[in-house]
Image 1 (cartoon, rainbow, N blue to C red):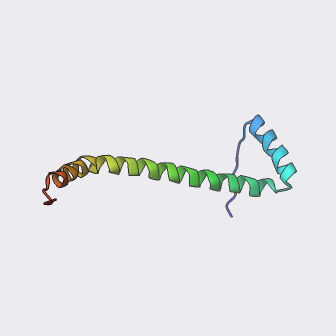
Image 2: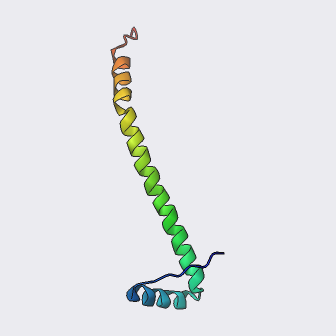
Image 3: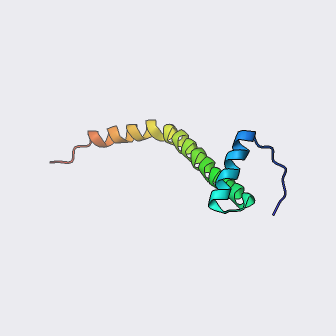
Length: 76
C-alpha cells in the first residue's frame, strides 16, 4: 500500500465520516473503494470518447460502402 496525504473539503470529510460510521467500515477502505469506482468510471468515459472518435472516422467510408451495396442488382 502507498501512503498519501489528502486534503478534503470540510463538508466532504464530515459527510464521509457519517457514512463510514453508519457502514461500520474503515475510512481508508471506503476511500480506496471510492477511488477505484471513480477510476473505473473515468476509464469508461475515456473508452466511450475514443469509440465515438473512431466511429466518426469510419462513418463516411461505411456510408459509401452501404450505398455501393444498395446499387447492386441481386436479380430479384
